[in-house]
Length: 288
Image 1 (spheres, rainbow, N blue to C red):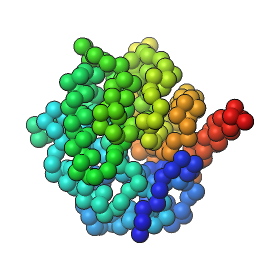
Image 2: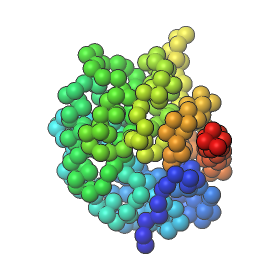
Image 3: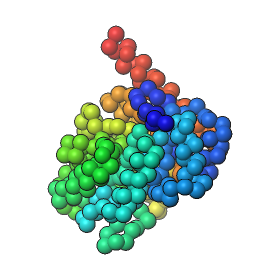
């Protein structure tokens, strides 16, 4: 069966997560596509893989990885990359994405997506790794902007410029996680709207929306990219700004922890669709 396409104008997608998978397959909610975490399906065969292939019959698929460690100075794991290639070759997803981060060193993996220093050296490393991944997979991938909780000393580039250079040097696209921008802007005290405006046109291939977790630290707070809450109003506002700047980009609502009932998740996707329709209507009115 040929893979279905994820295009502009398609309804907003949701994650194919274990707690919802059977219900999604049986009820076929009105969403545009499904995102699956790549590593959960590296074992070809068995119930989870069969669910993925069943979902593929009715929805376009996006594979979103969390363990390739694109920023690792020692390069990406050949074993991990081969498992991803095998999965991609079988599933034929429309989109394949990973993160602008690192999570492995010296053969050991860490249970987090760790930020990169925005330096020329780090840029060269991640570009080399993305180019290798794309050569092996024989397809363009998307790289997602990180959520940040600290700032490295000696930073040489602003993050939007770092992302733009990754896209220019490798030909990959950027998966713009608007929630990550809101999280990082709060934690690092920068202007989220200015971040979006600093990104060039033509490099955004997908948008992620999610809810963050607020952790109190005395009188202050830190935002955690936990994907365990409905999308906040401020993130919806940034999303509308991103659509107005980049056009109607395929969008996915992520909710990975403290899963709600499926109808609530589908309603979040419908809210994104309503914003997309409004922004598209405004753009059409301006052209007319």
